[in-house]
Length: 491
Image 1 (spheres, rainbow, N blue to C red):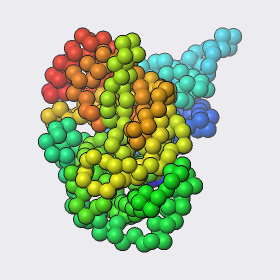
Image 2: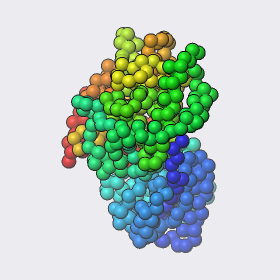
Image 3: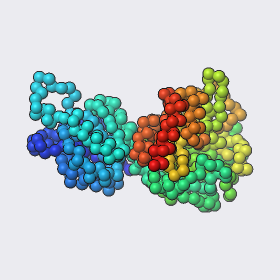
Image 4: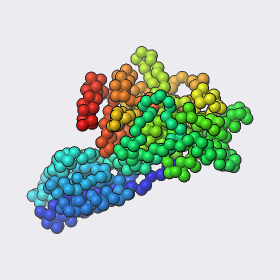
């Protein structure tokens, strides 16, 4: 499975020297205790960094965070009153994700003992509002989390934000290998790769299919046989595995090993294929692509490099759980029970499978090649998001539709593909109209793990437009939002 760096988040407490060294020491100890307590509930470690009281100290810690490759972001808290003018220079230099934790050390007011010393020391209600004004004044993206530090929902919000922050940092390491070009005459899968590198740090490289074929042909029979045995342990096999089917499965193993070797040598974390460009290959990668997605690689078909990178990004946020490349394939338009059937020709990630995947070998009408092996399964049920990242002429729009997936009640014996069935919020017609008004693509990333809030946080950190289609969506309001956003983001 693809690994990410062991990121650490820095906890920085703001204060000032008005109340003396004894108070500052109390502020420091309180901060350390908070960090120690919440660390046990988070996916990444928090390190208490400093109590800062001057512009010079603040600027120094920001500069260190900017240049430390393992710093995933800053978490700030104003235990006492921290004059916000002291934060201007540091905040203007900030290049790492920021979370503003608005909490206080005590949970309840100590009514019988509270005095002015207590009030002066514990005035986050004052200090955090001062700090919050300055961050807003400077128009710096940040996450605000409010509540007592012992509350589980506070830790959960911090945890969710951490994954999004790591996706921003780790996203700069996303490297997409495009085997062949985009599908001819398709608009939404194309785009400006330079702009993607400027905005997100994504590297997108083209390779002729012959480069991949050469790597595939270097794979040994022993390697292929070992992987074939692994397939038999993990998946249901066809009962009548004839010679032709066995050869097809073995060839997918060969593709998988060749693809993975190629990606590892080039430090690539995502890739695309195109059924229109298979020169030198016997099959379109099906099982091979599904298996690599299950290891955390981003993927999209038809040369769609942007969705491949988005999948890798959401694999980071989800810790590679319950997240897949997807496509809105066809509709079930029974009145009052409208649903969307999502699938692709071959490539749906088995992390979203509700049942044990089965390897099948069937003809594929596209690509003019041999029958490819692929994993077939029904998708899970539950709340999920379906996400598209589109380019709107020099700027990006992230479109999120909250959905409710259902296990299919009917078998599809003549449709040998992995599939997910869902109802979009707020309804089929409203969600689909909203999606089309927003310019959402037919290729998406579907996740049962990643939340709307995490994706919205990512959009905030990277300063891109984010459109959410959920149970509260009203089409008239959404169409106005799109107009306002057009003016805002183009300016």
